[in-house]
Image 1: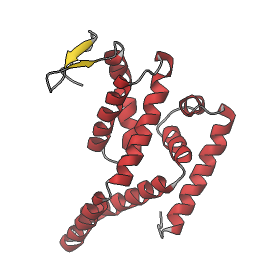
Image 2 (image 1 turned 90 degrees about the horizontal axis):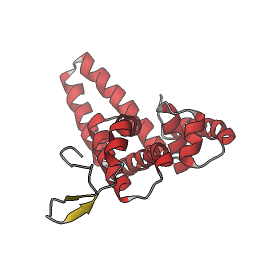
Image 3 (image 1 turned 60 degrees about the vertical axis):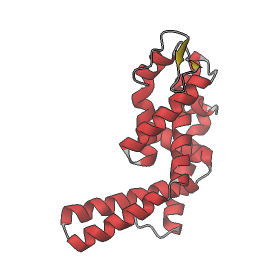
Length: 185
């Protein structure tokens, strides 16, 4: 997003063509970037991957016709969905983490071992989260990202009174998934 003048209606794309830019993109990006990265980081557990997700989300937002009043909720849901898709499609990360665990175990450094255990626990939670029904997973991620029940309800187009129940069910389902797959978290 940096270096792209969004004050006008169009800019030159990398391929030399003209690309449409929403007139509100710059303002929305500046206002909501941290929130989008925070939601994605909450799902992924990795700030750099969360920034990649945020870039995808804002590119999608630019192509969308989301009304101004719904942008924050739309962005948060898009960040959660995109991050969950990254978990599902990037199983290679688990292999890298297992390799890191093997190396850390061989080295025997307590701080490294502790970090590996934490990383493994986070991986287990992310994997269990990816197995939940999408609405439950997104509601749980948004609520634990700091959004209010009302904001989560708006973002998911649900009744505000049903969000508490949805989040509690999601937490219960997450615990069951962790237990089912042998996690001791």
